[in-house]
Length: 167
Image 1 (spheres, rainbow, N blue to C red):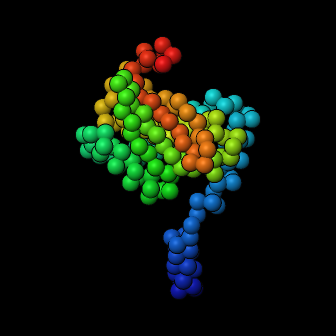
Image 2 (tube, rainbow, N blue to C red; image 1 turned 90 degrees about the vertical axis):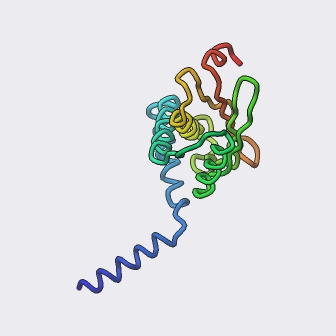
Image 3 (cartoon, helix red, strand yellow; image 1 turned 180 degrees about the horizontal axis):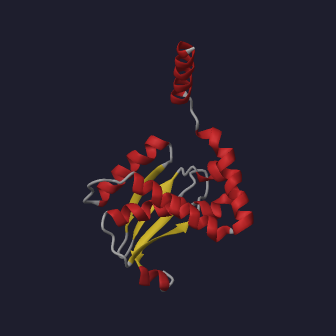
């Protein structure tokens, strides 16, 4: 009986290793979070997505990064390896924008999830920036939700007082 078990295990391992699995979880993930929205509300699900993003970044730290260009390169590699789109960094006089294109959020959570699911990447980028030494007074916030065919999200890093001023 042991040889049959090993053969079955080998077949299962080969199946899981070689099969594209992302679509298998999309429906369950989408419906579970939409159900959560119905029960606990958008703000709580947004907080859950943010915490999930923080957890992902905690479990996958960037390592040594000294320049924004290095952050962008490291993020590009991480995102590409997971088919999560692309990211570029835009420097402004008093802020830095993180532009995340081809986001998978619409595919994962549907149109109805776009109002809260961006918090996943918001938490993700915020944690990476925290790991790299962004001060407590700097905040990262999502300022644009996915739009168009490229599903672009925009996150802005700037001093907390600038957000309070409505900038």
